[in-house]
Amino acid sequence: MVANLTGTDWLRTLKSAADPAIVLVCFPPGGGSVTAYRTLAQRFDSGTAVFGVQYPGRQDRLGEPLVPALTDLAEQAARDLLTWPRTQRLALFGHSMGATVTYETARRLEAAGRPVEHLFVSCRPAPDFDEPGTFHKGSDSDLIGQLELLSNDPESVRILRAEPGLAEVVLPAVRNDYEAVETYRHQPGEPLSTPITTLLSTADPTTTEAQAGEWRRFTSGDFELATFPGGHFYLDLPENQPAIAELIARRLR
Image 1 (cartoon, one colour):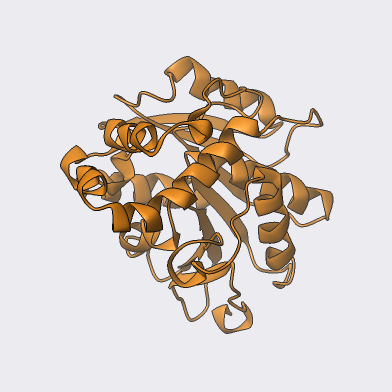
Image 2 (cartoon, rainbow, N blue to C red):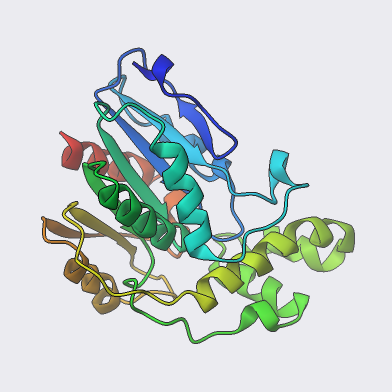
């Protein structure tokens, strides 16, 4: 029962269900918050409850210290997920930075004996890819330029150049998350037993199809690679969301 699944500072309800067959937990991209998945969550049927992970330093957690280590984000998410009943079926989804956090969370859950039904990772190279960039050390203008490059609507990001007060609120989390990605180094270990589905967009400047396919080395279970039209934030395009939700639902049936 979803009533038995306690929300925490880290775990927020996006879509409740009276008696869910499965719970999907979504991890936001760098600079993002739990609301990144608010619209997609409503695409699932009544048998699926959807939660989102809220990282510190944004929205209602704005006053909390940022966490610049990706593995620390995974540690806390896993700790809270382990408080839920182990009888509840659980799947994880992560986009961009969230994909790597999702993977590290799944590693910790498996190590604790908590099975994960499926891992969905989106627009991110496999975990042993070392990010070559150092944008977290760059200027605010550099960071805004990266956001413009990745955005579906660059004009919506350019307001940060004209409104320094808004930039002061938004950019610390962006810089922090670039540091988390750029300093992350994968620690070798056994592949997950959890099946992995990798999602990729056709015009993503951050991940090639070959890089996305490398995720197959990180599971001893089933692997699938699915491609959708659009750029890095293809998830936000309304025309893609029904097919994305159907792919996830199909893999969880």
